[in-house]
Figure 1 (cartoon, one colour):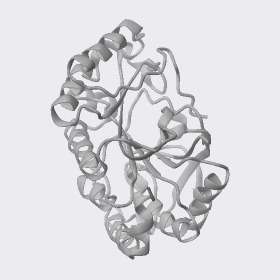
Figure 2 (cartoon, one colour):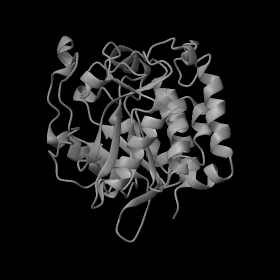
Figure 3 (cartoon, rainbow, N blue to C red):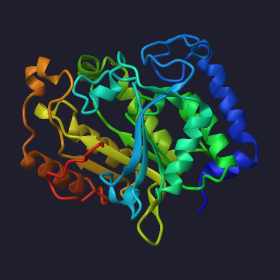
Figure 4 (cartoon, helix red, strand yellow):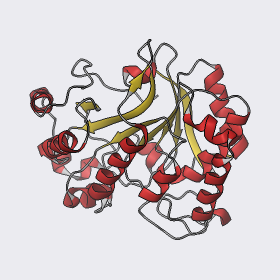
Length: 311
């Protein structure tokens, strides 16, 4: 199964989508923040990212879900900054919009994609890409023209603008989507995004509409489809059961869901007493049981306590 972006590139549609994203970036409305700044002239809004994307690191990552890792590892590109403001972010030194990281030109980012492929990556895994859609589309067009031919993963916090997701149809092969907060109150308090729940629910459904349930090849490697992550938080701040009920009622039973037990206080979480609590393994186990009772059949089954290292 060839990556979707290859056909889109050969037809000229990828270039058209890139130009559409460029126009939107000129008065930025690429994400739900809709800051309205001219990023083409290096003006910056919430994400503090102007014309060029910033890359904090890139590597072959063996800690992702098994279908993404395969034998070669997932080719992760960690974009700096974020359109969310999660106070507990485990990558806070990357997502913090006040720090600066290495800016890369479109050609340099395309080179990163090609270097990862040459190193044996099973896919190109764009980590936190919602604020750099224009930049990675521009680089993808270059890289695809130079031989990139592995699946593209959009690894998102799910604070995505529906119109921007429409631009990614026929481009993204695999959506790896977080489901953070089900309720607006917590989303506003901990991520500065009161509309996160509605945007995430709408976006996840749109992602599934585009690529369907996860498809793997005969070696178990992901080639297309939706994968969902849900981080269980202390005191049910994420609304875990409500998310599971949403998935069960709105998505197919075979939707790939990773109920994650790796929460730990990080970033600015120590300013919030409620975020310093431990999530018992029994809570995660009960949520997995609940998911099965709801009819969800495709849960990530790695051993409890596994922690996904980012570097």
